[in-house]
Image (tube, rainbow, N blue to C red; front, side, top):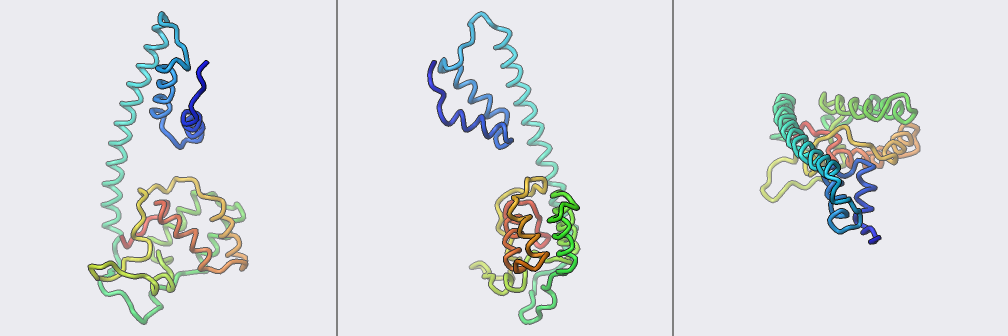
Length: 212
């Protein structure tokens, strides 16, 4: 039997973890069939027909998923427009009161999450609610003061306006962020260090910045 290429093994592992699509996994299996690593009797047309039907169904489902994602994106853009209740045309220079987070509320949320009193999804939903209500801002005073606006000039739009990942609050949350939340809520970690995890969530699209 021909050896199975390492990239096929990787795709199989990623597929089992949900990191690649069914279509990509099927393509890998087709490669093994085409290269005689997996032998299918030529007279076994039933299996071949089933594979073909699965491919057609997968293509159709992928098309429907893309269409649904586009509709969700359009609805999210409309919602973002409604949520833009804060003007950033003239950001404060010396007044730091407007860029101070409601730490007590955020800390209660972080502590409940660290103690497994709420789920990852509930923590993200709670943080997004605080951010959308401007009780927790997408940047701290230090992050705001250290932010450099682009070459075109104009006011900064917060430190997290450059993430490239699409908005998806249902992604798995790394354990280190939850650990940091617990350490911060118990006074073992500075707020600035805890914010590293929040920065990551913005960059990955888990949290949405209402100032963008």
